[in-house]
Image (cartoon, rainbow, N blue to C red; front, side, top):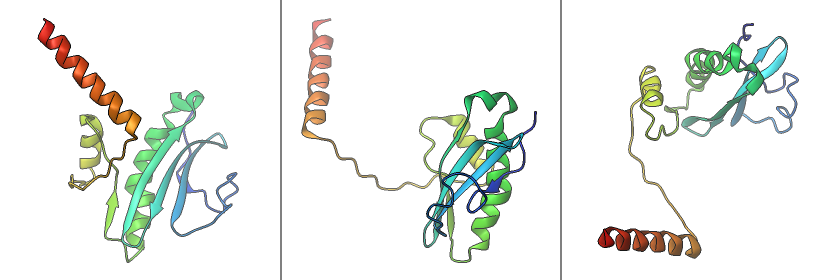
Length: 144
């Protein structure tokens, strides 16, 4: 079983892909025996393209559709599509977190880390819970 080539789903008969056609959103899909088994959602802003999220059906994992999707998607289709949009200046792979393998995969394409500000907003209840946890941890350390 081999996954078929990656393609844009916009206007191609993929359910939901053509509800709100926009040049700012693209759903890329991989098919296996005629069934969509993996997809990746990309957003395009004025000068910025971002790979937002990807997923694959569990039953199709033996055919490794996400690997095919990611390889073809990033190497061929999405990057080529992004380059064809003259106004785009960078392609954002999104954060890798502490995952060294993901970071290495992205660096394979020439990606580099760029520090950026983040905004985090927590409710009062979450702040109280975090504070209580830290307090309990200090008490436990002292009691040892």
